[in-house]
Length: 137
Image (cartoon, rainbow, N blue to C red; front, side):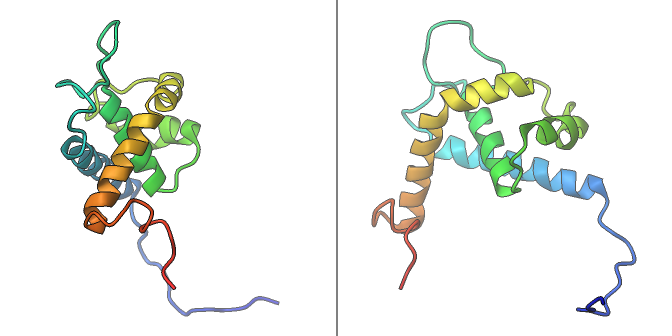
């Protein structure tokens, strides 16, 4: 026995290019938002100040890519890197490997959390960071 919920028929599905464009557009938008709220957290190149070579893919870009994947409900780094980002290698020329992304995402978790708090404060009008996370009654 099958249940029919709708008589709608999809004639033409969205192409994967359209969905990929949305992922890239979201990445660029989230990166800009991260830049706006990163005052005193990162240097001019978008990295947390530390010794050693300056990475070409900045810490802010790592955070923005992580948040973008989260907004798209992508929980598999393998799927993100092996499928979703393949089309954007030219648009994101300094894209790091999946292993590097995973390592750097762990190292930038504090930066990501601080950015979340700052954005929440701005959205909340300064009423506290937890009011966005607690359900209203």
